[in-house]
Image (tube, rainbow, N blue to C red; front, side, top):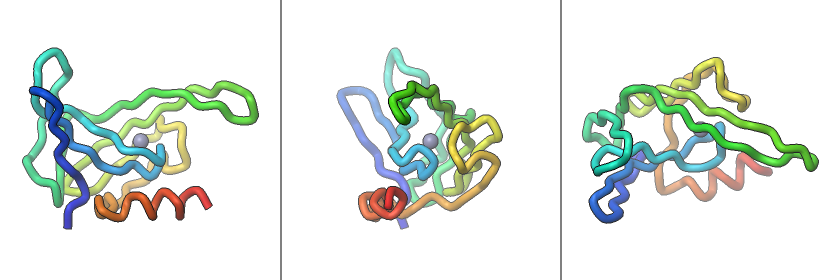
Length: 111
Ligand SMILES: [Zn+2]
């Protein structure tokens, strides 16, 4: 079962997967020029990326700007969230969700 999808734009290739902590997709680059490249094991069912993924962002909560951080290892289709994540999944390891079910998952997480 696919948990990730390959997305090609010009000469740049990303592997997209859904991150339940951020409630959005992350897409490490695996091919391309002028972008950082992650090593990928070639699998969309049980992907492994190295090194770790660090996604920094920001969000507004009750009118206040909060910086967010998501730091993870993806190995064999599982995502290991490190303790310095700003979301509730910090310190946990979970299976990546099937890629096709992502939209319904987003609704479930937000309800
Ligand atoms: Zn994330």
